[in-house]
Amino acid sequence: MSGLLAGKRLLVTGVITDASIAFSVAKLAQENGAQVVLTGYGRLSLVERIAKRLPEPAPVIEVDVTNTEHLAGLADRVREHVDGLDGVVHSIGFAPQSCLGGGFLDAPWEDVATALHVSTFSYKSLAMAALPLMLPGGAVVGLTFDATKAWPVYDWMGVAKAGLESASRYLAMHLGKQGIRSNLVAAGPLRTIAAKSIPGFDQFEDAWAERAPLGWSLTDQEPAARACLALLSDWFPATTGEIVHVDGGYHAIGS
Ligand SMILES: NC(=O)c1ccc[n+]([C@@H]2O[C@H](COP(=O)([O-])OP(=O)(O)OC[C@H]3O[C@@H](n4cnc5c(N)ncnc54)[C@H](O)[C@@H]3O)[C@@H](O)[C@H]2O)c1
Image (cartoon, rainbow, N blue to C red; front, top):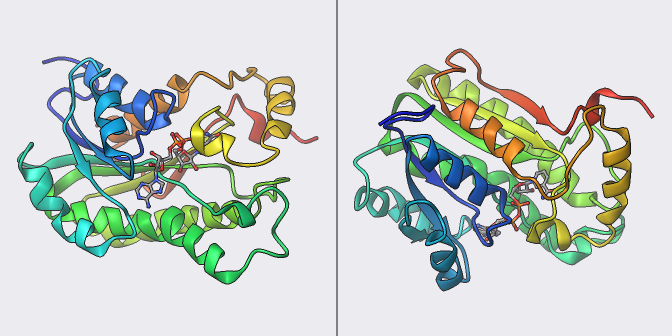
């Protein structure tokens, strides 16, 4: 077997359509020698259908990251397909509509709590659920949207991402002793289901393509996926708690 991830066994969450960032990660990972197990949430038959579009049809395990039973059973369910894990990809985000699109000042705590549970706390929960399968050299990788700034319409999702970025650093600290890395990819805007559910998300789109020094494609998930692969590989052995921007360079440019 050859490729950047030759022989690696990965758990990839977050596939819901073939536009999902996670789908590109799973596809590229398989093309680069990895064995992939997917998790699906909600519409499982849809995820199973999408999984068949991968170069190698991948098994799908049901995981709602807010469901403690799903998390407790995760390692056993994964073991039905692979005997261990070298990497885990967290590609999950959700916030109720009240939390997005300018609703920052009015969103009720119950909705904000849901956003934080699914988008922030789950990074730690998922990693811990998979930990019994992992050995030194393993990697956890998640997806963020640069949370150092307040963005129009992103509202509580931005706060959830700031928490995710911090949670990744804490995970790096706590799992470092076991030789496990935690890193994030900060992707620019991509037209996925999650992005389309944010009212006014199109505001980012033109500005990004115009301002990013390298330009930016809203429909090309591969650059973000490639960075995930690199962080999952053995080529970042001493990097943890890091955030790699895959945004055409937008974050580096003042307005
Ligand atoms: N699309 C963008 O512009 C963009 C930019 C930067 C970061 N991201 C991040 O990338 C990640 C993947 O999103 P995407 O853009 O590919 O969209 P997507 O809609 O394809 O993926 C989001 C996934 O989250 C899953 N999910 C939601 N609630 C869940 C739960 N309770 N349990 C388990 N899974 C759950 C959905 O099933 C879906 O597969 C998210 O963290 C998102 O915030 C997206």
